[in-house]
Length: 297
Image (cartoon, rainbow, N blue to C red; front, side):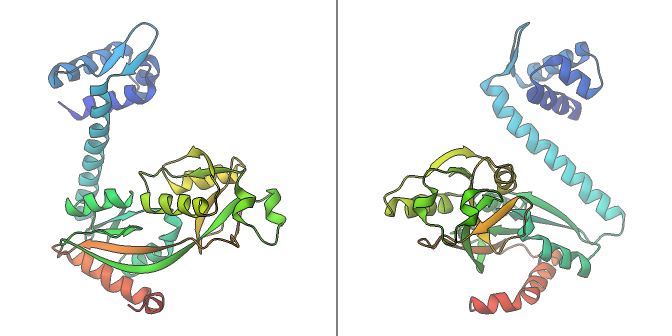
């Protein structure tokens, strides 16, 4: 199996059309068909159902697609590490985070100023996925919203997050002085699924349940950036942590009869003794000294 087999497979899996996949890969259809056939023969499983009218992934194909993405990601990270080592870099630092990357930007910017030769790789992962990645040593540090119960992982609280309702800027509720849960009951909520953030999802549903209300969650997206883009486009509303970077087309309002707060945590593997991690932790505690004092850290 060669990397081109993986790339060809991903292109076809994403396009589900031999003509479009071949065009995307800048090859003709017969070589693409041969490469896919070779891949299936080597794996020993049919990856696609295909007729003259349509192409569809089999269950085996769906499983392999997830693995194929991981393989290409690992190859890219290996290439990046090699490039960094050949350009006088001091290594790479792999960061996992939940929510939106805007929260991390001030920290990452200052870290880059202090250590410009350290390459940074950002990975948007749920707290559960970050726990796995820390155990497998595929990330060095995690910014999580759910504490990890493991003797191998160090976890410290770093901030309190209060959630506010995010509305399209021309929303009728934007003119109200006070917004209550009952004002939101007929609104379309855009949320991340429970699998992405179980603690927040359960907290959100619990607050409405206590008020005897059922929120209308009819659109879901797997990352906060997509959620906020949909809100900005006027497709619904959501809850977002505050403080938060301003986003065009969105305004935020407190909910007068609800207090939704969560704690953010920093997590790393105790056995990770890399100099890069030590530099980051020293920098982080220095850079966020005042905020950590408020948490008693």
